[in-house]
Image (tube, rainbow, N blue to C red; front, top):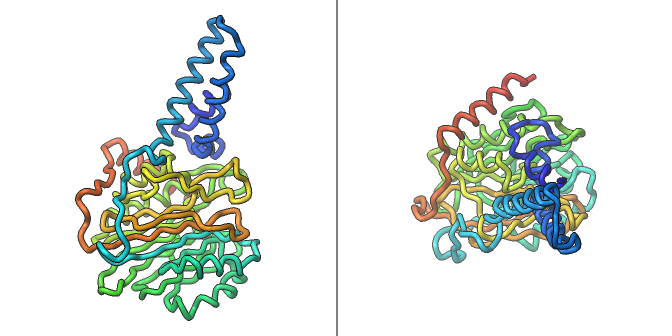
Length: 344
C-alpha cells in the first residue's frame, strides 16, 4: 500500500511540497516494490481478494516507476548525440556545483576544479566567505558574475571565455537570483547561459513548489525565444524525471544529456541510499555531448556535476528536442499565473 500511495501521489497536480516530494525517490520506491514482490512466495499459493488487489496494485506501481526512470538508464535511446572532443566543433566544459554555504572545505572544491579544468563554473550557495576563497580562480577565470548572499541562494559564475551583457535577475522571488549572460567562444560565436538555483520544496524552504516551477517555466520561455544557442545549468531542486522538469524541457526545447546515459545522482553526497539528480545541464541542439560525470566529494551535500559539450553553429536536426502540446502550454501559463498571484 505504501508503494502504491507513493506512486499515485505525484500524479496529483498539486503544489504542496509533501506531494511533490514523491517525485524524487522513484528509484527507491521501485527497489522497495521489487523486494516486496520477491517476498510474495512467502504468502503461499492462495491469496484473498484483498491480497490479490494489493499485489496487483504493487505490480502496477513497480511498472509505472520503472517506466518513469527508464529514460535515465543506459537501456534508453540517447537524447543527445555523442561527439569526439575538438573534432565536431568547439568543446566547452562546464561545472555546476552547490558547495553548501556552511561547508568550509574550499580547498577540496578548488582541487576538483583544477583536475577537471572546466571553461565555465557555476557555484551555488556562495556567500561572502566563498566569494573570498574562490578569488584564487581569478587568474584562470578572468570573466565573472558574482552575487554572494547569506541566505543559501548566492551564486558565482566563472568563465575563461568573455561574458557579454551579463546580469543578475530575480525571475520570481526578490531574494532568489539567477545569472544571465552571453558567452563568446574563441571562434566569435556567442551562446546564452542561465544559471539557476530555485527554492526547494520542503517545510524549511517552501511549503509549495509553485515558485520553483514558475522559475523553470520562465527560463524555458527565455530559451525558446532566444535566437542564440542556449545552456541552462544549476541546482534546480528538482529531479530529472519529474513532471515539472519534463514540462520545462518541452517549453524550452532544450535537451537533457542524462537521457540514455544514466542518472548521475548529485544529492545527497553523504547518504548513498537517498540520492537524486538535482544538479542539471540542459542545452539546445547546437551542442553534442563529449563527456559527462559526477565529480568527487567536496564536503558539500551535493557532488559537483561536469559536462563537456561540443558546439557547432547550426542545430543538429538529428537531435529532436521535445515540444509542448496544447495541454502543456496551458499548464505552463497556469503555473505562471499562480506564481504571479502569490508574488510579494
